[in-house]
View 1 (tube, one colour):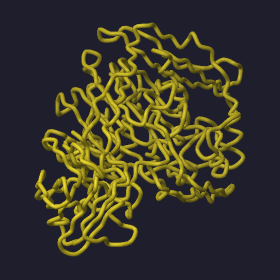
View 2 (cartoon, rainbow, N blue to C red; view 1 turned 30 degrees about the vertical axis):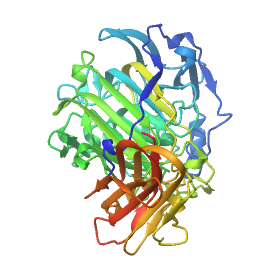
View 3 (cartoon, helix red, strand yellow; view 1 turned 135 degrees about the horizontal axis):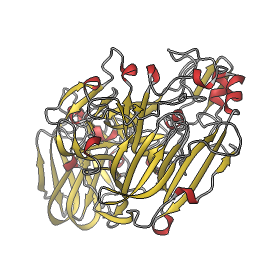
View 4 (cartoon, rainbow, N blue to C red; view 1 turned 180 degrees about the horizontal axis):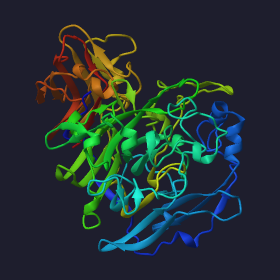
Length: 579
């Protein structure tokens, strides 16, 4: 599935709002641990005391959950306390003392200050997040100075006395938030001791990892069990360091060589992957013994930046080079979608920047809960999550209803409290906002006429209503010969840029993007001047910039409507700007 080229989408000019380089010392030991009693769980589906697990595993799961205490701590830092550190740990014997607590401390790393996040036990977690929700448009970025959460070092998964980044002592399992009880490779019996749950250090469930940067759909994120996050992420970049036992005789997935645009097998790489991906729609009915989670769509240079529903890594880090060299990760949200960006010296390909833009909806596949405002979404992807399990059934309706909104929050670090162990150091965490208020769209809600329309719900007014993600009827559509769309700006305006959002921008086939067309202006509606003449277009979004000129009327003349045999013209939105 195609995406618009970076040049086709006018990116905002960013202004730095906040930055944290840890020049002021940070020490998480200065904040007290507080026991989490689950008094106000976020939801009853996948949260730590979630009902889903009770219905799947039965009463024995509740006994396991109650066998330990969870402790948490949070503190703010940076200008106006804009950044929050959040940590989680367990007290296994309930004596009031946390075993192997995670820490965040300021240290000199590679010639600059950095926050060192150390998680010595897989049942702990440590993250950075914003203290308040992100703006509707933003860029967040930071530098990763070191990373030791598994993967190979100098060709081996065992380094520094560890096994894939884990300490070799003691048991390390997914207890009590295991894979669903029907997952292959274990009994699914929640009554077994801690050490008999799925081993995260080796074996078929052995993996480590780190979330370079994630955008999630709920407020005040804190470390939780890994399956909780599988239902609450929008877009993300992470490392997935599988143990060779998990790869087994398979490929383990694939990794893109961005120099040759060809894939190689994960098993032949260094296991320090950079996955750049989005969460799509969930499976509304996972079935007995399963867990809720969203479809996963990965973007790489090998796919031309298109998101594909197959585990595909965009690159591999080289931790051996750190901290003398570092990596930069960034995510942007603009009016059209999300952009994921990773820069640094990657294995096999060298120094480069990988950058992929994903519209909110492509070919009917949305980014999960993409709408930060209710006005961005019309309810078309709503559904009911249903569980029919051995120990109970439940349903959770309206998981994405009309009128909903899901403001963005970012997360950096070790999110999980039943897997992942190691250390990393980060610095220069920055938040940018658009430099200025976007220029007004001169065509917004102005009178529009057309040669004809395909259906009553696909009138020309739909092309100037300010929306292009409201479903397949949120467009102007026309059949027949001599297809045109005209907009009356209602007064003479200085116009220097026209943006057209074609079929793919609204979630329909990219092959239906308007192929050949002219953009024209007029001061009287009779005499027309062509300001853009396009032939052979395949992009979802096209931007046409010209020397500003006075115009009251705009006209789109469609010459060839699509790149295949379909004969309908489709415009999801026409926008006009002064420059």
